[in-house]
Image (tube, rainbow, N blue to C red; front, side, top):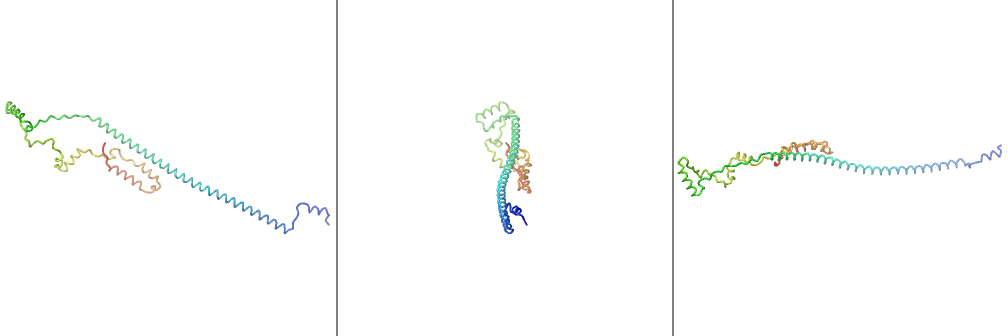
Length: 233
């Protein structure tokens, strides 16, 4: 038999439940804890998804900004290269013009004096002709003045336009070549066109990287520079 002291020691502390009642209460507590854990987990996952969505939108905005900055940088680079080429061509044209100016200044200015042509006798007044005839008879037959016939004289007031139409085509071309200055090409004025930089610039364009249109355009530029004529300064 158990002593009363032992029974009192067994019932000390928490109140013991029946086996069925203790199992059902523990299951309820576990289910409640699992529900709270699931809710916390779902809330944490939702917060992470919201952060990911915000970060993706920020990444898209930053990528657009980076793309815009790259395009601006490419335009600035091409503009600087074009400015360098323009400055080089301008310096070449300035040197060419300075050379032409120095050539013009170095040429001596020669003044041609034409001998005074005697006036034909048939244009002289009558009293002058009488004086000339008297002096010729007094000087002798060997020193007589020979009068040129009017048919061999061409008046100076006659325009040369009618004479140009009477010339053959070959003579007319040679005459025009002597009168009209020859037209110089841009290659003769400024030297051959350098299109290497232009080829490199066009290769930087994404749509022209694998295409041959850039090289074709540069070749057309070179041909155009050889064909195009410019007035000589």
